[in-house]
Length: 408
Image 1 (cartoon, rainbow, N blue to C red):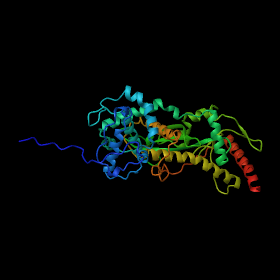
Image 2: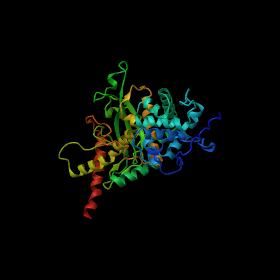
Image 3: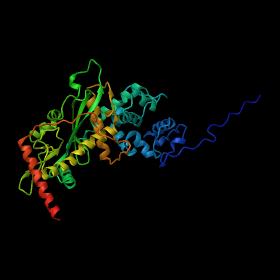
Image 4: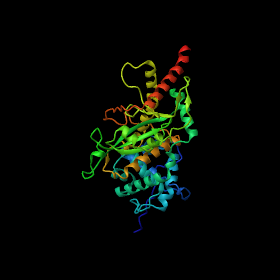
């Protein structure tokens, strides 16, 4: 009896679109992507198509445009993602965590490792869920994410530094042009990162005013909502206490920060460099807070309106941070308290990298509400006499600034 002829495999199958095409109809694509040609294997992209098709087949709503779909899952453009890979590549190649293989028995590429870590940070999903999406185990997700965080913390710090004086002058010029505030160098705000802790590690230090266990993050941002200084502390701290425990506070008090050129107002009063914060912070010579109380004068109300618009840069930056990197917005399940500051720092670094690379976030990524819902407002009554005098100088300057506009 003659042998049965084998049917030709692959006949009649739909051809996959090139990875260079602008659109990818994920809903109709079912088969796994073909292997990359040898010349393209240096930068692994096969993981992306496998990941994308798995999510499409699960029925999830995914942007039809491939670029938007990538930003939906990883927050960055593909170009910025490749840049991030270049930062950590040496570490992930030379010192890879042990046992990093996928279900097919192949060593994970740098690109796939970075994708796993960034998806974990962006989604805040469990390690089991992230691992299932990439075909790896929970322990691999844990190892990869931490190795990525270690590398970014060591090699990407230049994306979060206090600006040089030339950049400070640009920030001041922008803030004065937009908000009318002279010599303003940025804004400050803080937010709680909520966690659950084992009973043996729970303590009053971590219990915040809303009765959550949390870590408190303070961020100072520039005119583009880029973090230029951060500090973390246990959730029980108040806004003013966290500020006073920061290195930034010590530098300012010693005259080594916000110590640039003084501006002389029309009234011949000196206005030094400062940042804007809410009434939860003390009024200091270098930290301007709003006027409190009823029956405020028109100049005071004018100052408050401009100061609020400027300080919202800090609020909006934290809202964007938590919206982009949902691991900070969701409740973290029993994190290592010693590693938590590093996780927060790397999320802030990634936030800044998006700004530095001019990546635009998808509207669906940003949080619809305030970054710290469930917390009552704090009010710090500390008033430094020199800070009070500074605020009055700025208020008078704004009044003289408004007068010519009224006459026109």
